[in-house]
Image 1: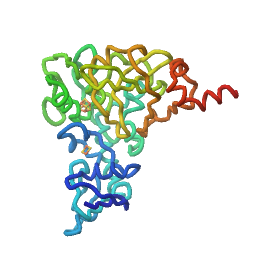
Image 2: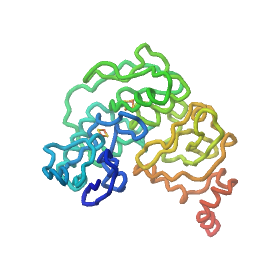
Image 3: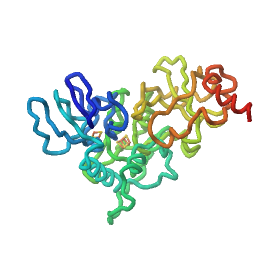
Image 4: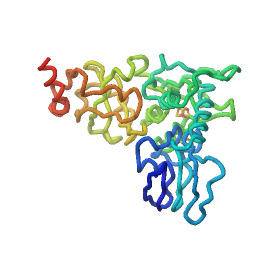
Length: 330
Ligand code: SF4
Ligand code: FES
């Protein structure tokens, strides 16, 4: 099926959503997605950040769709024409969605561990209004402890359901979910059971904001001061392919490898994530290019002074050849 998004055409399989068709084209025309996650069945349709305008329904029925649609949930029709960044209406609506998401989200980026890789921070930067019009009290929640590995900050949650789908589909025991309705909805384990099973750490990777963060990494470092390195190990529970985040010679965090849309390539187990934080535990492959358009990608790995681990690893040495030469020249 042929679909045209912001003037660029692409042929896709029937049943493909507009969002995935846009991802096949790539670049700026891809709508942002806060709740859709390609690896999680049933995700999407919650946050409305991916709204687009269908200016031509299909070749057979060229009438435009009367309202903006969620591109993660709308499948393409042959001959469909879609506008994303070329539609002022979409940009305006997205601004409204961001304003709505930020109504209850605290602006605590300076102390939030997600800062630098937070999709809401990026959206707020691109579409957010400088001031709030909201005059009522923000939502507050009783603090609950969900275990020694994962920190829950309910006030930051945008109720995207990704962590619930992850627990449902990746782990064998889901202990948390969204309780209550409307303004009172909250992520909770209900009776404060710890979220603790072999794959529970993946909820940290899928959370688009700082509502679920890694307790073992908490307040240790701003992510843009860390160096992401690809590494693997033989693991009997998961693929063992991860990104190690270095500060100096120390691995201060282990995550799944994330793509340009902030989605992990493979889910990893808790042993790889929390219990193997020594360089000796891993086979280093090379620097991880962060392609997600956030401040984190501003940390141009190969233009910075090499880490000790770079100096001793041939693969990393090759990738950093240019800067070694520059260092010698200087
Ligand atoms: S905690 Fe994070 S992943 Fe879970 S629903 Fe809230 S924002 Fe989404
Ligand atoms: S990504 Fe489409 S509604 Fe959230």
